[in-house]
Image (tube, rainbow, N blue to C red; front, top):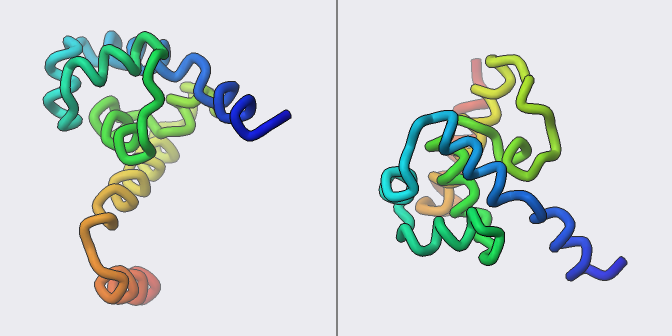
Length: 116
């Protein structure tokens, strides 16, 4: 299987799971788009499985929906214990936030996290 086919298989159903997560949180497309800093048109394309979002967009949507990216991709069950789900969301938030910082700042943060 080629990289394109594998990528398409992995993304298949992503929009459906995002739409379902949005419904669970009782959010309109417009509200989710605003909270995830997306245009409503972009979110609509993602939910219709006609647009493939970047990792950053997937992370932002996951954070707002309080779901892990793995859940959005359908890689793990939505019946994950709350503690594990919370940890995954925190890690996703950390990854998203890390894009705005230098390698030096990230190295300092890692050193801080490794100390007790």
